[in-house]
Image (cartoon, rainbow, N blue to C red):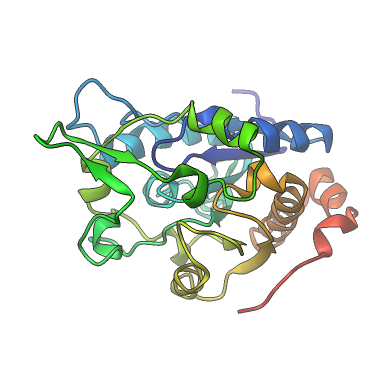
Length: 276
């Protein structure tokens, strides 16, 4: 199989969100010369509400496997609930792991973008103290889905009313098993990790994000001054952070390519770096 050893960003959405939530940031990255792709959760608005996290992991793994087998250097960008999905999906796909067995490509960095970092065996609900948050609504009688609410405040508070309504119109119900099934892998032990903070986040406040980042050990970090959906409201800042994550991932994974050199010459991502 012909290989293409160039970087690609692969976005993994949060709960309730479809892949087009990343259209703005993906278009910006394209203008900066980067290719990207997205993962669509199998669970999202599934006709069968028993479909959950583990199905999403298996689906995301198939997507990442395809890019890895093409030799691509993958930066996985996981948002919110997507952190659990990405963590399971990258198992066995690390660039260094694949290189040790003579395989091309692989994941050079996992970016947790205001995302849950969950130890193996714990669920998202476990990380919330065992209870659904007030804005996470269940039907009575229970139909198997969780519905988001208070969207303007929780997800999109730094956007215009028009942009808020456009984003809200795309949200879907999410099956409860996505929040209840346990995490299956802790990739930060073998794949470079990066936490991209959203400093105004109302869904995952800064103390929670900081605790998740500490779980990663010594990750690369970057701060975007935006809401839980900073990739929509302040995409330039998020793009700068992702360029930094790419550079660090290439370096930590031992990749030496023209793409690595090109990434290293872009000074934009040098701003707003933080250390835990």
